[in-house]
Length: 396
Ligand code: GAF
Image (cartoon, rainbow, N blue to C red; front, side, top):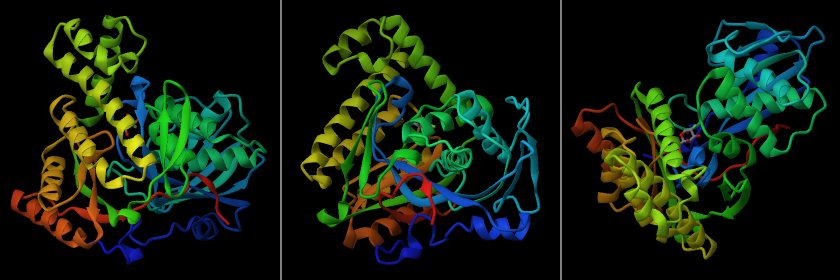
């Protein structure tokens, strides 16, 4: 079970990325510099980012790290600790989406997206090593995008503000990799600060770092990686997004986040089908829950955010329909064992649950979740404690 005093039970499983060592071993010589960017969890505010709404993620201490050295021939040469034996070479001249697929697409896409947004991106040797688990809903891709974009930009002499770095990384994911995600994950990876959650109002283009220290209330944040990944997820994400955008158009607003809570009933009455009404209700009520959680955190009332987390999960399960059996079992078991709050985090259809748990109950809650998974016949979950870490930056 997760032990709050044991660093090896934390998000990275105690592992430290070793990009410089990989660089020397596989590419030869020493890198010019090393950068890294973290994975994230989202405390609350799910499927609101692409509706111009509110999110509250924080970076975790699992990171993608990249060691980089300039080349003067306009090419990228890329290796990864997670893809042993493979070296991918890319010519940056005339690079277009579709030219590089698979894991190296995230890296090549960072160079492409930098150029696309008017920054410089020159050739480089890159060695990538990540401790962010893939497929756990912890934004392993945003971590790779942000770390490589930061590395390539810095190498070319550009200093990108955190938000611009996030937008480059999102462009990489949207257009080069081809996933229609919002901006939350890349902002969390780029702009997070240790000890805080990132309150990001996407529509207003405003961020604020809100102190988040569960320990002062005797609490820890327990992450349950369900190890489930339901492959329908990708198409479903795009469908949810399309439904929201169509509903906004029907209602004559530029995004669903324009609808105030007091206007929700009238908005719902203006929509033709029940499914769309439930999707809209989720977005509008989720924005309200983020607001409420931010106000509670401002007063230090960490424990009191539990009910909003539970309501968020119910809304994602029943109205937005992006949960799954593994996520529901994890949330229910954690709450039944005394967690102050629990909810799925990230896009859904698998991935992870975040639970707010009394420090002295963490073993009990962990055992309850693991037991419930065994009884349901699910693969055993991975439990970790997480706390807010710093966003992208230079290492050493
Ligand atoms: C995924 C996406 F990448 C984010 O942009 C966000 O929409 C999230 O799902 C749901 O809140 O992580």
